[in-house]
Length: 173
Image 1: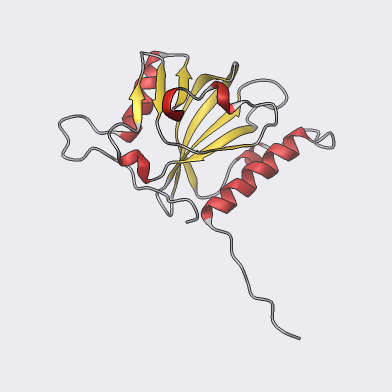
Image 2: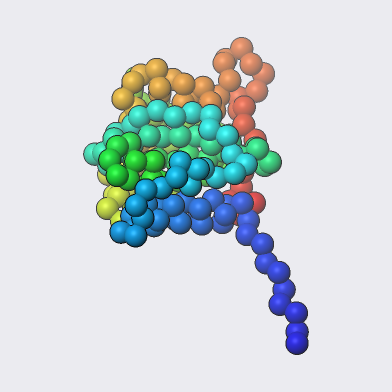
């Protein structure tokens, strides 16, 4: 009998599988209550979490760092109710973030991300409501300090010799 070749998932595929599974499990009528560990993906550390207004709903925006690859990803999750913590969308921070105009502050509460691909896990979510000129994705924070802290995750202070503080996770790695 021929041997079946082993295939392994990339980190990106594993994250997408995990988010999809958690989203489906949280919405299943068979699920009574999810354990808090069900929402966590091993090997990641949360660097940031703040409330945002996203497609008219209150969500948490989190930034996770993969401990092995050091790549970053964004995730919007439900804030309240029975789907609390359930992922709505995730996006991987790629090499585009090295551009100085990747992250554009629009005002004290809003930041535009100029080049980002969302993976959406909620049928009711309308990504187009957050897309602005030139395809920019708008993140609207509830507190101005949150917008500043979010920007600081990606850019060093002007006195620094380097403009980017992150190592990038390419999709598929």
